[in-house]
Length: 354
Image (cartoon, rainbow, N blue to C red; front, side):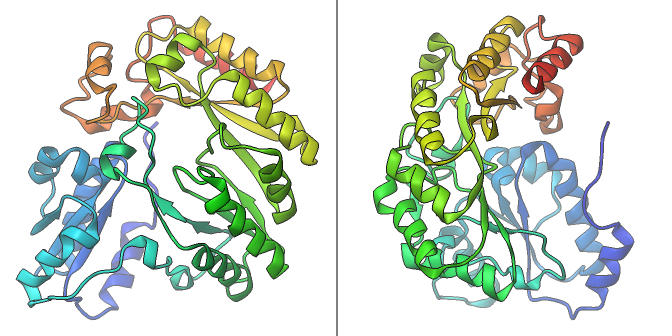
């Protein structure tokens, strides 16, 4: 099933035509397998503002540069972090000679949304780990974070100015180096006395968890906690980057339980559909997590161009995803072992929730 998200085109066109022509259009991209949507969006914007320079950037442009240049009707391609690469484009267009603030110096303009059910927060960009299935190290080689005071102020602003009760963190490395970042952030939130519920849908690292951090998370209002274990198999852990092992999960759960959390409410992400990964291995991973009382969640593996696992993924490809980013969609399980049939996949998902 192939679905389309966002506003109906006619509604989007009506909104855009009510605006004066902009000086330039910045089109951001994310997942590589949404490439056709970016192509459609570029064409759509061209039709409304034919004389306006169109600048495209983001993850897809950086990970699939040749495909992007071939398939997107754009005037400029920003192939790196915008604060470093966009100024030269703006200088060529408008004679701009200033400096652009990075995301560590700004906040999302959430007030522009007519309706918000929850807030989102990115307190830092990048990750120091080099897991083989991930390209974060390639996109952002160093971990850059907002100052603690700025993060606390942004949380207070979302809660008090926007009236939001739920805020989701989307950092790749939210709790790494906890004493210098997340712990003082949570202490600031507690001092402010605001009533919010925090969520970590991206998953957080296991090794930095401590008794002190667990207590702060509980006091500050963390409601949804998801960990990224990826696999319980030691051989595969070593192959992927050895970010965490099952003992780290056991310890983290003990800390959280002592802080007042129920183990059954803690989610653990497990990668499924990795090259050479049999259905039986995934089942063992699920059972290992359930044995500790946590709830397993299967994350379908999506091959990412430029990641260390890319070449190995090509050898296990069920579809020609090197030439067509659409086929990199994790929903297709593009590198799944032959034992991971549709029936096996359904059984494994049911096992997670049983």
